[in-house]
Image (cartoon, rainbow, N blue to C red; front, side):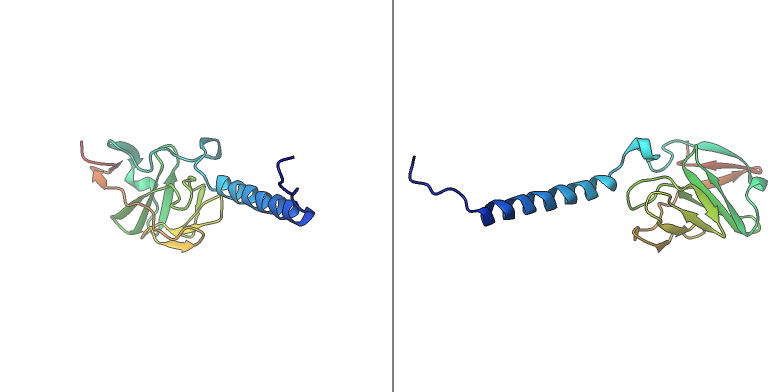
Length: 146
């Protein structure tokens, strides 16, 4: 023996409790990580111009989600369009639907105003990223200018 006393039962139990709490914390953080299996995008907005289709496909006073292009487009008034990334600002999941001008994040329940990008319900607090949009003769194109 080296003269060291064995750890008391209390010390061992405290250590086990601390390790368990640390593991639970790591598990909680991993649930909010960006995992492509959960529909997370690696790039939140188009990096090149992306054709979305006819402007008429976005209803006046409504919005349309373009999941493949990872954007949501709203037309709050005739001929007035807004476009935002469809990637949630909390953990990176893609919005799965738009109801009454609110985009829904299926991962943690965040909701966004798709006309302004504003976060309406957490856990997300940051607004959606604005995406440039142009109406090119009745055809919508999202992303930076070519």
